[in-house]
Length: 171
Image 1 (cartoon, one colour):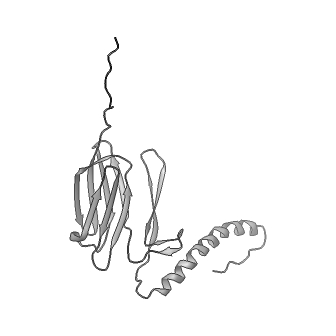
Image 2 (cartoon, helix red, strand yellow):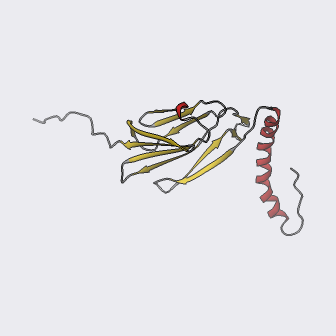
Image 3 (tube, one colour):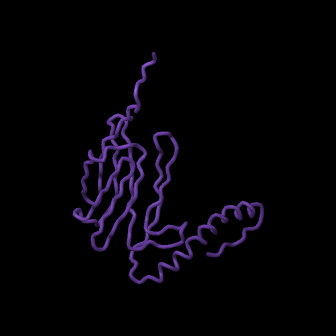
């Protein structure tokens, strides 16, 4: 992309504003070249999901099959848009993943107390996502459903572990 130099009192402001766009172009141009080389590539997508955590701080998560930081394509495997919410009142952790076109029978969910992996390996639209959890869950309490391209998994949140140790009597 070519950037014209603006003259006059706003020239410096324009120059500073367009600098960020040039950086974005320099990251995207190599990926675009790679995408045009692959005749089988049909869909490319990349985005950010921004949410506010319970601590009031913003959480930014990338998703898609193209990642500008790496400058490479991950064609063939899609990373679904995933939202994780913790309901302190109900004591649950809910994961919602958008996986349009995935076959219900091909979806696999593997969970530990602190991490969830979702994959779907049907023909044409394979999905994969590694999801760290901000709360400890009971993986055996999982309740999952898949309707209209939306996977929803709800876990019961684990309470704090009682302190381990032995009471020692003082004589």
